[in-house]
Image (cartoon, rainbow, N blue to C red):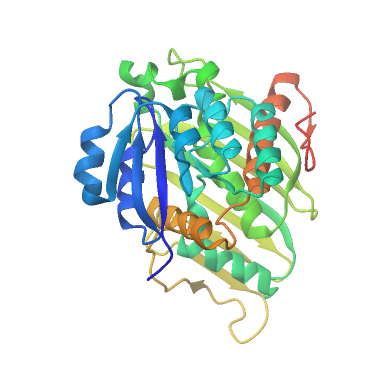
Length: 352
């Protein structure tokens, strides 16, 4: 039997993706018991129905729970503005933390959390779950192998529906309000692709020049559109388009051109990865990923996070990489605000 730990699910009425997290905790073999801490009682019934006997109790106060009976891992899913104090309390109690992104409205609020996690030798993991998708793992291995050569350029886009922004119910949600969310499409969805670009290439974004706008004109004070030019620390240049433009669904891809070939990630298609090499036995032949697209999404990522905490093995994302993704997003926002290219801070800093 795998080693098991207790997971505290710390949320509130405005917690995001709670249903997905309940299912993930139900299926995670390393999760023995779950304690739901929800001061608003919003998810009591859902937790009981999904978790069954795995749900050992329900509490109402996050800080009191962490102080009295700290779990093996805290899964924190709260609106961005409210998350940092709860994450900080968990780390202070010596608890590993898995946090729904963005977990802050300013990068300066996340930096001390990363520092505290490091000082206490605890994991702090942002929920950038696409990292473990099979096509992403395969693309990372392909680039690491050197068979495509050195990355030269990168282009990515993640486009979702504008339709959601027209609903009054959505406009009242925290992720449509800058003071509660920190930003719009880029920090809610585009952050995933920024993280993947750095993850698969093994390189950090070091400089950016970006623009943000509300092109759809809906009554929200966050961007529905972002575009940025990117410089990576290995010399690669790239771009990102991140926006709510469609009537429904998603358009997405990440393409990397290299000195000896190229690869294309299209995670939402049946064949999510294709590539071509310019030399070798299959020179100039289109090659397709023929593996299973599953498992993917929150369940494998949460499972990996729980396992890492239970067995003290490498987590699916480090505190440093979590901070790196946030620093990159806020650097784009800073560039857009000041109308100039911005250097993304190195370890320990914030965008300047």
